[in-house]
Length: 313
Image (cartoon, rainbow, N blue to C red; front, side):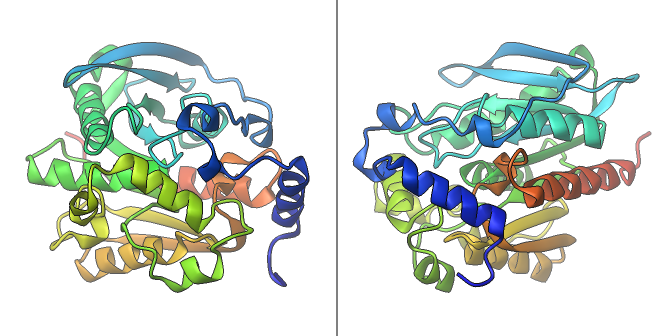
């Protein structure tokens, strides 16, 4: 416990004293009622925020589009929220999306993909990919430059961003400028040092991750699919440059870092940063964690740099 960030430690103590049951003891419906928005702080004004519905295979989903001040067309970040594919929604990541839109000077399209267990794998991944295609196809309509599109997300949303990058490569597009991966889930496995060290007591637990995976996957075989476990993909070459942020006190730390190493080995430019004293979810908590704010700044700067390096005609 020695080197955990004091602010993170305070949050853990507050959560512990609230005495809520562990998530894995709840139904998905009850788990979805949890609200962490107070940890995010006050929502910053953005020039324009619009809610829309977009078509996906077999239905439609909501997206929230944040447009910064200035003259478009803007680069865009397609963002997927975390929550183990089971919980979370557009409101969960409203504050970080606003901050990213303003600080990176890009449109942020936040995606309300369909959740498990009502919609199991691969629905979330298919929705995530459909959303990127929609952004490219409707770029003119939403003030976006289709040549400068990034994907990003936290936790399960980071998993979806990595998977969308793989899908886009396999399916021949769209061309993506960047992938912003915040403590992503990359492997259906619990066999890492970070799982052993951080199994309980640090916000996200091993038991909760098992609960998430069990709701998301149809069977064990799905867990071996690279579109569920991108760390198992045979070839990671030709993927967009990446930012990979991990947290020291997070069961997912090692699989995120392993993915960053595999991207590097495949010749993909990677900026990898571990926030040593942080817990899972800290990107959602800039209102109470200075390091959450720092990570948002780092991500915004990385996006700006990635977008400015794209050669547009």
